[in-house]
Picture 1 (cartoon, rainbow, N blue to C red):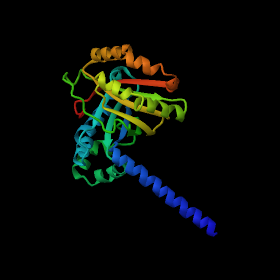
Picture 2: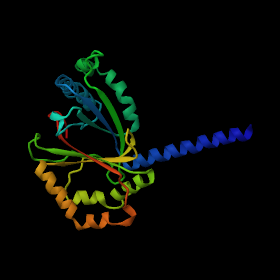
Picture 3: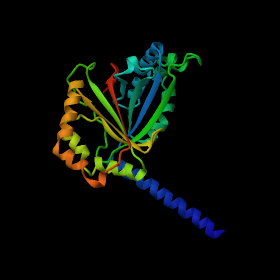
Picture 4: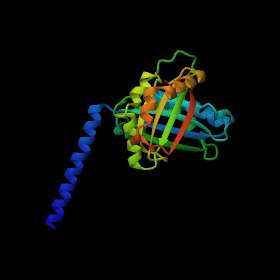
Length: 264
C-alpha cells in the first residue's frame, strides 16, 4: 500500500514537472495557439447570418477580449460549391485563453445582443450545416502570426491555406523539423510568401498534420511565387535530402479570399 502511494505521489510530481516545464518552455518561446473554426453552409441566408454574426458580434467581442487580429476567409470556389465553407482564424496566447473565451463572451452584453440572430436560430433554420474546430500550436521557429502588408484591393488578395498530412507521427515530426531546423520557413521568408502562420495540429479530424497559411496580392502573384519556389536551388537541395523523403502523404491546398470584415 505504501509502495502504491509512493508510486502515485511520484507520478503526480513528475506529471506536474512535465506540465510546468512544457508551459514554461511555451511561455519562453512565446508560441501562440490557433483555433481555426470551419463553418459549412449551403444557402445564401446561412451565409448572410454567418457574416453578420462574425462581423458584428464575434470578431468585435474577440477584439474587446484582447485578440487584436482575427481572420475570416472564404474559398475561391465557394460560389459553385455544394458544400460552401468559411474559415475563421483566431490567434491565442494560451490554452487557458481558449477555454475562458466562451465565458467571457457570455458576460459581454454587446456580444449577446449582436449575436441573437445566430445564437437564437431555430433548429430547422440553423446558420450552418456543420461546424468544425482545429486547434494548432505555432511552430518553434515561427512562434507568432503576422498580418501581411499587401497593397492590392482586398477582393483580389489570395490567402493560401495548406494542410500536410503524414503517414505516421514520426514522419509528421520529420516534416515539422523540415520546416524549422531544415530551413523551409527561412526559404518561404526569403521568397516573400508573406506567411500568416505555421502550426502543428494538436486536435482535429485529420492527424497527424501541420497547417500553414501564405498570402499573395492576387492569383498571378501566387502562381509566380510558387514557380520561383519550385525553381529555387535551395528548395531543390532541401527536398532531395533522403532524410525528408515520404514525410507527406496528402497535401490539401485551399485558396481563399479575405472577407471584408477580416483583420487579415
